[in-house]
Length: 231
Image (cartoon, rainbow, N blue to C red; front, top):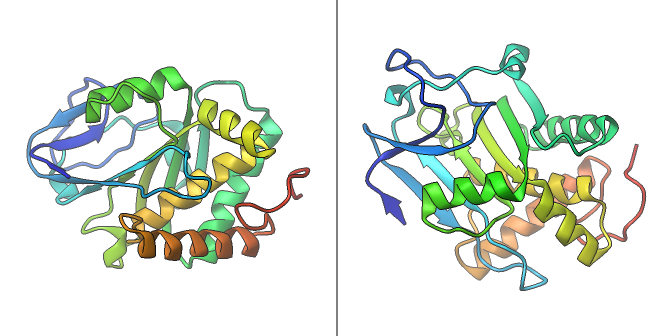
């Protein structure tokens, strides 16, 4: 599904056109003119009642309106995780950031990944403002790479990850919240790298790659037995 306007994670702030800066204090998603974005909906996965995430790929990111820089951007390339809910322990947040960086390495991906962990309320707002859907979802990926990371550019990705959804799904499957959130992060990065799950064959290939990455970083496949977070 395509929408006719540029979409950015941004505050109502004025910055010079052409600069590319990233959101950390995000509360709404806005439509901005000057390009087109593409949204891909996830196909069902096992178990079949898991929620669907979305991916936004910017077709002309060099011309989109600038976004607000946050402190994590100063770290440069790599992975940064911000818990906007202030409900995840610091050890779990740090674990997520470390494993997200490990996932990038396992994928051979360079560039920058910024993850914002949000509540149902913020995810619902984003989902409603952007897609007209008032329900929550697990992850929304914003691929900001010039030309798209799937075309060989370094990653330039913002993720919204819903911790409340991760807690619900984790409780249903006996999985730790941070482990479930890591799955959403890996899934979002794979979308930015060109994977899709819009049909069953593509979904199977994508989920197999998720398992490979999660195993490579010592976490184990998606439906591995529950247990303490690997150190």
